[in-house]
Length: 113
Length: 115
Image 1 (spheres, rainbow over the protein chains, first blue to last red):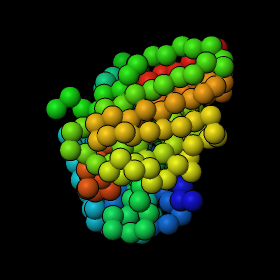
Image 2: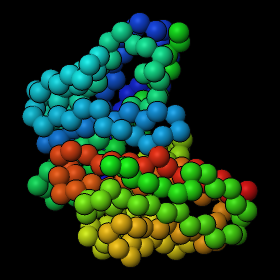
Image 3: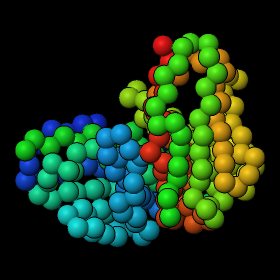
């Protein structure tokens, strides 16, 4: 089945640094979603992308839908301690035969104050 | 809206015991998903329901796992008998008809430990 490769697996950064992570697929999607999972909680949707090349921001977060439709990127600017958690990408083909979101394995972010 | 509600939050049980995890989806959502999360395998889809009907259970690891959705507001995931390798966090998620556009809403999970 379809798989998403998310990288890096983990990151250890200093507060105030910018963060970049990405997600690649062997096949195309028409929807990309980014989730964050706080420790001890379920994933929560951060950003949704629907168009190749689209760039969408949510506060300090910016995500991009790759031109090839096989990848997506998430950037966090000026990280703060509450950014700690696991970030998941998810892809889907709305209206296609694939009925579910496909999730990456996550990028675990640690922020040192 | 109270969101997706899962119970219990934590469950510790002995190997061989039956375990039942419960989920109340968001009112009006017609799709419900059960996921299992481990460090090694990440988020794995176990089974999902559309309008209370199981659509795909290919992710259920073995016959010891079963799931039901008797009505639109309740679902259970049962493991019988439980084994230590079943230890994981189990998430329930729900969505309406635009799930592939707007994503799924997850519950807070049940952390299962089988000793």
